[in-house]
Image 1 (cartoon, rainbow, N blue to C red):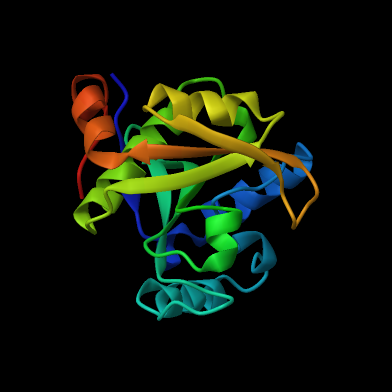
Image 2: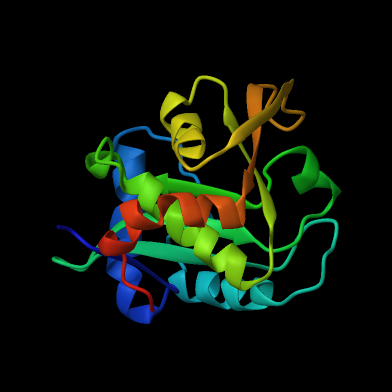
Length: 193
C-alpha cells in the first residue's frame, strides 16, 4: 500500500517544485493549491520566504495566515501534489477560495491522491482548531468537487466567481466528522510528520 505525507516546502525540494510547475505548464493544466509557486519558479528561495511570512501573518485584505504543504509519496519521495491551507479567512476568501486549495500533478491524477491530500489538509485544520472549512471549485472541475464530496463536503451554493467569472461550487466540510468517518480509509495510507 502506497503511503503519503505532507511536508513544508524546503530548499531540498526546489528541483521537484520546478518540475511540478513545468509539468502543469506542459499539460496546459491549471495550477491550484501551490501558494503562488507558479509565480516564483525562477526564485524558489523568495517563495520560501513568502510562505514563512504568511504562516502567522495577521488577517489583511490581501493575505491571511496559512500554510502551503507538499504531498510526497513515500516509496519514491516524489512530489505528487500540493495544498494551501488558510487558517483564517478575509472577506475575499469567504466569497471565493475558502480555507483549502489543492492540486495533483497531471501525470499522477485519477489515482485518488487528492482525497489523501485533502484528508491530510483536514488534519492540519483540526490541529489548528477549525471545525468547519469552506472550499470551492469551478463547476466543470468534476474531480475536485467529487473529492470534496468524498470527504463529506456539502454543497452550499453555486455562484459566479467575481474574480474569474466562472460558475463555481462552494462546499462546507465538518472537519471532525470527515476525519472520523474516513479514518479507516486513509490512516493506513498516511504518515504523520
